[in-house]
Picture 1 (spheres, rainbow, N blue to C red):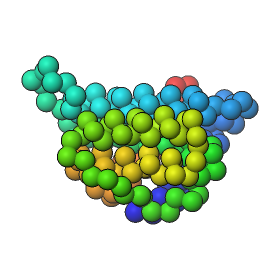
Picture 2: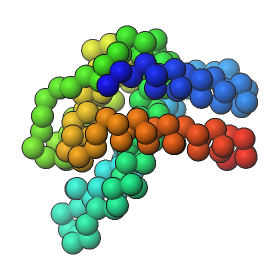
Picture 3: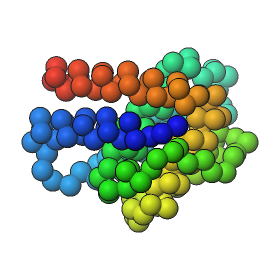
Picture 4: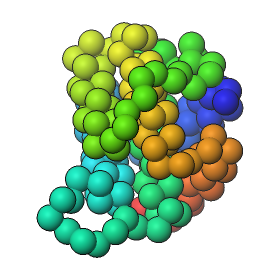
Length: 162
């Protein structure tokens, strides 16, 4: 999947938000926190780590929406550090047998990127997200379609005082 159409859309959304909100300071660390929170919300909806509970995961549509919320911030931090334009195809890395391993590896990748915002560390996060998508059974078409839909919601939220 070519990610440049999503990069373009995210760049436009980020610019819109920054102009509308008068953002002039560096918000990279806040975007990293937002990405970590969204990844946590995704994990929470999958319930993959909740060994103490019999309740199953949320519906696929809810999990996909949480997944795409993360993608917005993942794109945004790459744009912030001038790395997103280098990302043409979605990198695929190691395969995990367990969703929890993929979540932990992705958390680690985000933390590493926050400390050292390199192309290698950025690619590592994308590899983690690719593996999470694979384990959740999401196709790239589903992810792109959900991203487009959520991008529209994000504009609407900005226009209505979210």
